[in-house]
Length: 372
Image 1 (cartoon, rainbow, N blue to C red):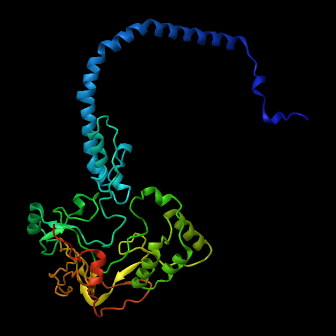
Image 2 (cartoon, rainbow, N blue to C red):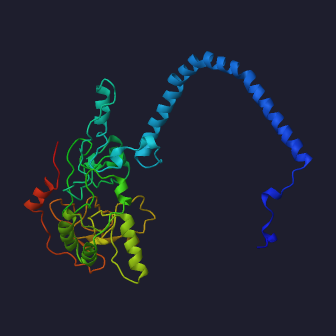
Image 3 (spheres, rainbow, N blue to C red):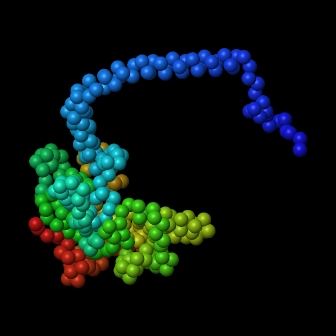
């Protein structure tokens, strides 16, 4: 077989001339020189290391280490609130595993500190309701207004609409919204729904672990025309481990359906009202609400007004400076929020649904929450 000259020559075809030999000798001599310098200075370097070890150790213990600890401590609030990407040592187990509170891993640390050799461990306690939530969705976490909020309420329009408490979860968003800052149990928003299929002890890896969805359950969720129908599907399917699938599996399913020309409902996949809910809206009345705004000089109230919900949610605050703004309604935690799916017609305002004793038993508390 003849050689193809177009592919170039083989590496072994390169000629080795006197210039290459001369440069190789110079390189070898340079290496010998560097080796001699290293050998000559090695004793001095060893002595310098030994002589400066105490001062270097002191600098590390009393300067470098405290400054590093201060740096990590300064980062912690920003990391916990999502403003900075955590380093490996900053990833808290409570933020990636259901059922574990921020104080849960301290039990393992306490066991290690109490053991003579420092290697003892303790079982990780499941000390919060994430992954076993019965009172879902939770109400807004509120606490008495701070002095600063009270002062701002005098200078600016009161964002709490005269209520003595204001939202406070932003002060510690890494905690599960089970209790407020005073230790009171946070209530729930009627009616009760289901948070999702994931359970205590599962960590974030399960979301990418190819947990397959159940075909029949997917069809049932897709065909649910009302929030009540969705809740019925969840009540029968989720206890048996049947659901839409993890994000990878369900994302693959959605792409497959859409590329094959199929149609799907618009799911509200963040599950702020409940797992498997379609995109929804409040049932609306024929009245109009203008929200609290400041300043009002250039505010186009007619453009930013909205039809008043039949059952107003937490935080509803109508601006009564506008004569045609909606009624001064207040959120009632004993009444179900009247909502509907956007793919259907708004049924408007009808009779309200009261919270039942069975729902209170299921949640383990009344919707107003519990003190202490």
